[in-house]
Length: 473
Image (cartoon, rainbow, N blue to C red):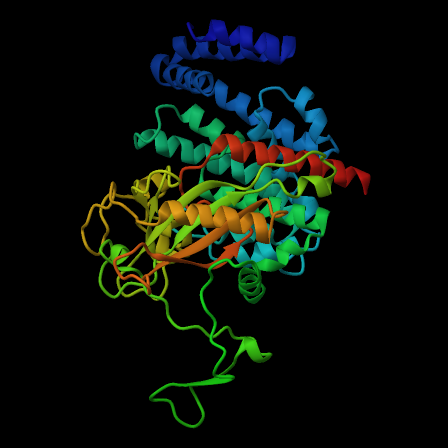
């Protein structure tokens, strides 16, 4: 009954007299249960009341989420949302606006493929929501706009609810309600941030028609680097055509003909790059080239979107070094080490893995359900604890990426640069020779520390301008 009194006041404010009448009926049945068969039904009823009361803040969060998505789905503007939708930060408003824009965006052209829906189907086909049991590809929510709407409106809140309870039970969170609110309104998980970055890239490319987005093509990227004096992985001019044969296949099988892109073909022929000695000391033997991902943010597209005034130069938002695994062909199989302050501190931070997000089908069985469960203190192949170790050249790599963003693709909001630390040919004991491999314009943060204030400001400014552009069409 102590719970019933405050709940009565809540019902009075939320559902009015009709809700109170139903509540009094419930109290009457509860009283009857107490007299007829005292404890089982009474305890169950009180437990239900206690559960609902304890979840009241989650209901408030869900209401804000649904209200905001419906506001944008029914034509509400980004600028009106600033004043009409209370309880949202700039970051939260940008996130929910981009999420609500998915249904419109799915049918729009994409800068690297046919439509945004096709890009979703391609990039989500090997990504799952970690369950620790069975991994279903998230591309299922991109099959149609109806699938996407159901996924956004119902599945996402359900996943956030289950995940918040799980994390609270595992001691990863002090409050399930706070975790639920963060997951829905201000997500910090790499998947939701990656998808928001993809939407930002696609919408900016669509609104500005900027040629800068063509640099996601690896050959055009290399050409632009060469033209702008940016160090990039070298390309072989010869041979014109390369023939690769399997040593055991016969009858014409196992033969690959690779025509050099320098001579009109489709293949970029390059020599294998090696890690510098300082990097090799941090890695197991027979490991792949281990690169650093630097994500930089730029406001260069804003003038094209009608936002006047000079814009600051690109800034780094996140830095992560990928320590390759023994025997792997690329550093996609790696431990990701955060560099929380790479511009002035080259020490490695904590390590982690996101392999559980790619465990399709029964491969998910026994895998971590939470990203925090995937934290790694020692490299699994060497047993070395790398946190606190120096990564020589990290600061210079950040400066290189900021410069490359400014001169090569200033109108791209976010760019994820892959930087190789190669041996210094002029001085073996000198600093590593830095080379760019490629830039990813729909990039993710690989669980690194993000400059949240700058990132939120970039999102808010771009989505506000993009929404104004959409209303002028």
